[in-house]
Image (cartoon, rainbow, N blue to C red; front, side, top):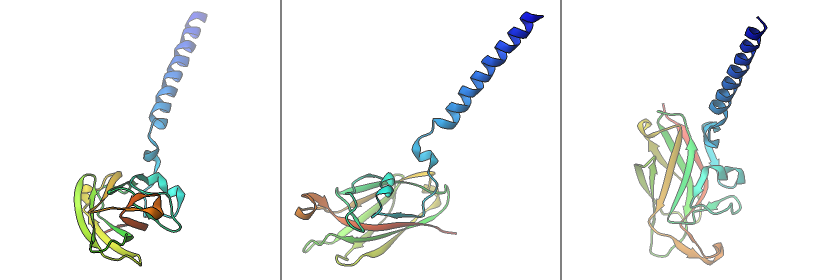
Length: 171
């Protein structure tokens, strides 16, 4: 009888250990992005917002952040299968006789293009993202038709300065 109890206890301990390991793997093996809640605004002046910026952005420069390549990438959590309007508050780097254009793709899907002809003041430009393109984590790419090497920005390429992005759900 004593052997049966011991065997039962040993089996229970092994079973409990197995279930504990399964629980830990399921609940704690997610990437950092899995824990992000949907975003409604990215402020480019805040260093903590760098979490979303994957490539093509400088460090914050006052209340703005410059693109520093011919493209910029962000990863943003949104609510899946919802249509969104992305509002970009930006200004272009002034270049004589050239007009800046921004092409936007979301999850490798072409969304649209905007001409950015403001150089002094920031202006908002809107892009509508169809719900079919929206995922839990969204890879958003801004491509610029030209960059300029600027001495004021450590001889980095610059194209556009960002103040903020707003992600607004559409009904």
